Image 1: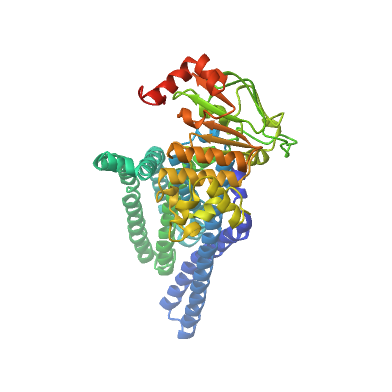
Image 2: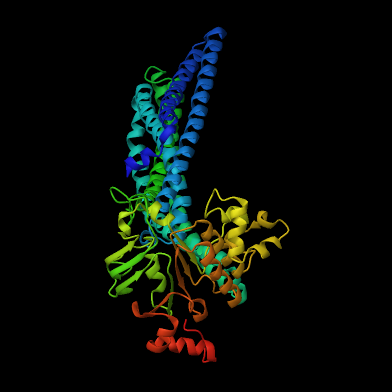
Length: 581
């Protein structure tokens, strides 16, 4: 995992290496300055000339400017390195998620993935910055200050033997007490983001059922839970400051009290005023370094949970991958299921599909009918390898779909879902998802076939009209027709319509299907529908029930041989109740 994260530094490696080197310079200068000040105090006490005072003053000013230069440069390089690291890490996470199959995505909630790419990456970025800056400066300052303190302070340095272990033990104890609470917060962030995501995506449903107050209470409970945990953790960490103050004042009192007595008793022979001044400064630097180390420890421990969560995504192996020598040419749109069974996870007790045997010729139009939960959508998702069959083989163009490269396979199969997605941008930009090189004439032709051209032209800007995120500014039927036009532009070998005309009227539905026959006659068309009228003209109709194929035949054959099909038909044509789904 460390190696994976280190690779994300990339071209910012020079800035990451320069930062600790600059920190070495800053720490050395800051520890050198109290030594020079101590000598200057002793020189003044001895009655030195003004020239010597000015000379030391100039040296101190130069050292202060150098320290500022080193510190400022380190701040710049640390910011550059950490920001670049976070950018590369987010990009790698996003690229990894894009490679996931549905099976992989099912293991993570979308809210959790958002948290990992935002909050967790930010925590890791902060930890990285502290490692290359604070985690170098603080130990160096601690070591330099202790060495200089014993060199300058003589017997006064004994205070460090007491203060350093007490402060170090206290800070580590505080950090360990706070860590479990900090770790628990991240899982609760997932819940908070999930509440936000669900509420925004389902805003119409929330308002339709007047559930705003319920959603506010749910969000408030999640936010309160996080606040409570953070408050608890911060209350523990808050003990850092009083502990630091106690050790700092103890150190000051001890040095001033004992040091003053030693100076008076030995007339400055054992320790002088300059050394006393230096000891106060070094004592403060030692304690501040320990304080910084404790904060770094807390931050790194917090980020360790974030790193673990990021690692889960980066190390997740995509369930689907290209074969060693992928086939890129798909000869035709023929589809065959041979003894196919499927379940969503290895632990599942029941198969979603079982014993599927079905052969579809290239250019054939196949309708699929079945009740809710009969696995109609699951069946067609095996064709473009959104999932892989658990048992049996799915063939396209006479070859096992696992032999094709995923890009070639999915480029040959277009799926239009009932709840297909439109993206923020113009209508033209959305349609070119099907074919990025499509001409304006091809776009218009596809929209005419999908019965979308007339309503598009009714907008003030026509094909340049803006679509809001998710297509919220067009109706359900308009969205479905645009998605069908987008799929037609792809000119696929197989076109799958998964209940994608449910929001259009029967006349428009018939016109769309008629357009398929003229525009893509050689394309295999698989139409999943709830309405018999949407599939009755198909070459064959597949009736599914409980994850199995119940019957296959033409409309007339199924009316005679399939009880399920006949019942659905009678319900829809004679007012016998609701649709099958």
